[in-house]
Length: 353
Image (cartoon, rainbow, N blue to C red; front, side, top):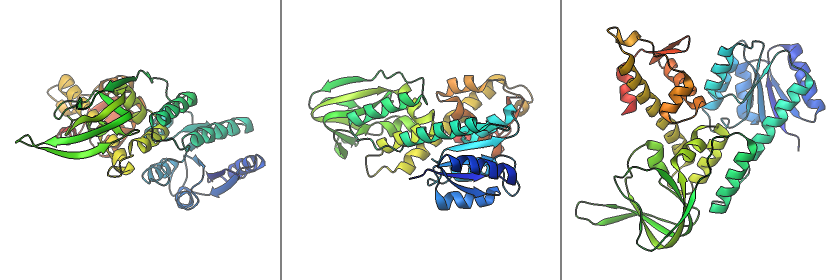
C-alpha cells in the first residue's frame, strides 16, 4: 500500500511540482493550499508524513505544527518544514515546536526524496510493536541505536538477582534508576503510621518500576519488595531521561512500553514527562536569576547557552528549547540575542514547586 503524504503549500507552482515528484515515486499525496485546510486534512487523513511551508496565509507552518502537536492522533506524524530562508531563527523556532526536518528552497528532486524516505523509514521503525518483556526492551534499544536518533545512550544496565523479601526500593528514598523485572514477582506497598502495609500492586516479568517518581523528580511514595526470587534489570537514570526527553518518536514508543499497568495511561505519562521538564527548567531559571540578579532584577539577562542550560536541567537541548518557547509564549520570559530575561519570577517559582 502506498505511503500517504500531506503537502501544505500555498504556492501553486511549488505545490504541483512537489506533488508530481512524490507521485512519480509512488506516494499518495494529499494537498492543502493553506494551514487551516492542512490541519483539517491531517486530522481526517492521518498521513504518514506532512510536508509544510512555513510562510502561508490563514495559518503559518508554525501554527500548523503547534496545533497538530497538541493532538495525540497527529502529534506523532513526522513533520518536515519547507522554508525559503536559511536563517537560524527559523530552524530554532521549528525545533522548539518539534519539527523533524527541513528542506530549504530551492531543493532538487533527490534532496526531497531523500528526506521523505529517511523520515518515513524512521517513523516506521517506531510503529513496530515490542513485547513488554526484557527481550522486547532489548529489541527496542537495539532499534533506537540503529536509527541513530539517540547517540548518548550508555546501555550500562545491570541484571541483579534478589531473594524473597529483599527490598528493591523504599518509601521516601529518591530514585536513581529504572527497574525492569526479568523474572519473578514484586509487590509495591505503602506503610501507615502503625506499620501496617497496604499493597498497591503485584508486578511480574516485563513490568517497569519506579518511573513515575523519576518523571516527577520526587521521593518514592511506596516501597517495592520481592515476593518470589527475581531477576531485575537496573537501568541508569541518565538512560531513562535520554529515552524520555531526547527524541519525540523514541519517547512515545518508550512510554508505550512503560504504560503496561492499566492504571497508568500513556497520556498521563506523557504529561508527567512534559511537566517534569517544565518544573526543572523553571527551577534552573530561578537559580540562575538569583545568581545574575542586580538592582533591576527582572530585567537582568541570563547569558547561558541552551546546551549549558540543558546540562543543568539534565535533559536534551531540544527539550529545553521547546520549554523556553512555551515560557516565552506564556510571557514568563523574554529572549533577546539568545539571552534570557525573566518577566514573571513569581509564576516561575510556582512552576518549580
